[in-house]
Length: 139
Image (cartoon, rainbow, N blue to C red; front, side, top):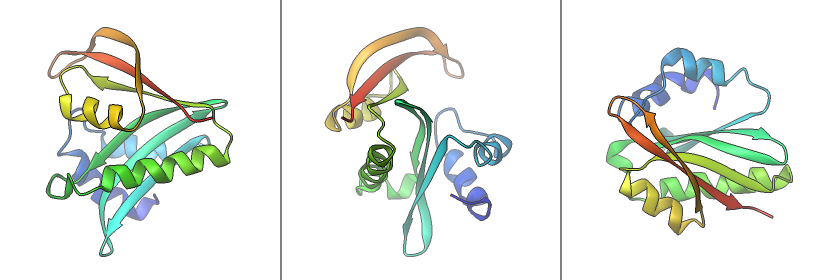
């Protein structure tokens, strides 16, 4: 992801739970240990993800696909590309948090080998929800 992508990524964020602000998106580009990936379809950005590497681990901060492009393998593409990047950096495991009520995301992550390793009660606001902590071993 580059600065020129921010407006489109921000529009995708507006379609998600807990959307990132334009300021947060811009700041993410300045973080040296961050990885941001965009997925394009016919030269249009249709999804993105953000990850932080704190070697030997990483944390997936966000994965989002444009609403009209969901269920088309774009999330899977983003994951596969991210996994490749993390393996190049010799990262051993990837963590993430997801809302306990987000069954679609929980099912998606389970299909990609993530395991439930913890929870954080009342972690999210607007709407209130607990966070489920998931982990995938990459090594």
